[in-house]
Image 1 (cartoon, rainbow, N blue to C red):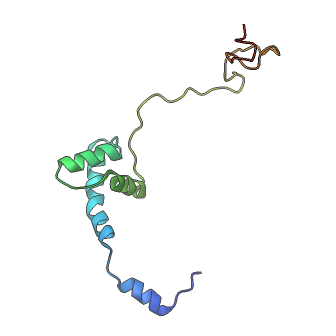
Image 2: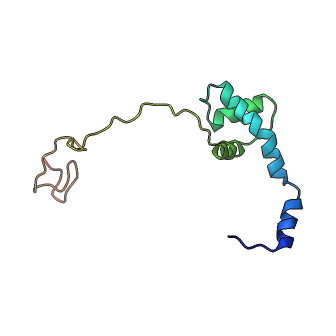
Image 3: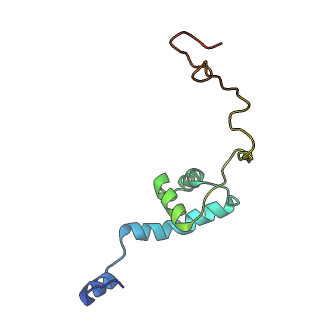
Length: 113
């Protein structure tokens, strides 16, 4: 249990909200609306651009922070990596020889053959 003096608790309860918190409360519905309108696909960069086009001055880092706090994220483009079974070697079928240190590595005697 956190021990606080009664005066500290009362001071915190009566303190006004910070300018950042007020701005966040103003932007949270806007960020959520743009994200929902995009079909939950827009990330912070596109949400920021949409808000700026709509006339709201907002930085991308602020949108990133708000989206992180809200637990929302955009869709990531590209294909997912194919799952690899443990029986498949990571680098193909290489044959290792004691004559060379590594494949395609120049040695003191020259290039391996």
